[in-house]
Image (tube, rainbow, N blue to C red; front, side):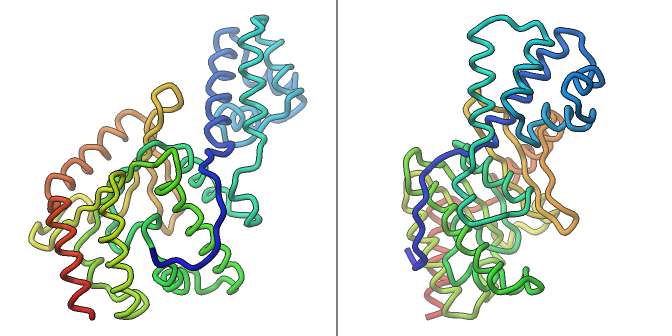
Length: 293
């Protein structure tokens, strides 16, 4: 391992999934009771948009509001009410990343999902995945991607990125399947020494049972991943359906609809079948590192 920043982070999911579960249940109960968003908003004394945000899990909700909603929906089952209130409590808790200060809402949401995921399948077109980046490699990327931000803000992002990596080494372990384009092995992010250090780190991490790294070679020509990087986050079946995440200059996009997930999964399957095996990929990465010595 090549990181030197001190990080002390528990492998915890944070409030994101709890909010999603509560929102989904409140949506189901409202529809079963045939109550409109407008009627709920009137009961709570808020806007309809807030009700939509509560049901989509975008925002937390107070215990008092949950009680009002459950009562309005005619929920008198003690166990159901207790479950909803427990999810409300979890949804109001601060995620482990809160100790780093205020983070952009989309980024906080992704960290929450990542922390709750049991497995992630991702493809990276131009860089090493964040969960596998060394400190100096990540710093070099932030210095270019976030050049308009203050140095202190970039340092905070670096600390968060390194802290996120605990999910690969702390129980319960996250299973990570990642495919990286071969160009990543040659793009000298931070210079030759930084890239070599990063490649050796990839070789080391690829030996772990919960991490699978494949390289998509130049010889494959055009491929679906040329559209950009993507991550597919998977959760226990009773928690949430898979979610695909796409980051771009236009903002963060989360895909959940069945047709969207089918399209993303098909593309990833194609990339997986076109990539080198884990063993051959490890050898290719090691060879690239040796050439930088």
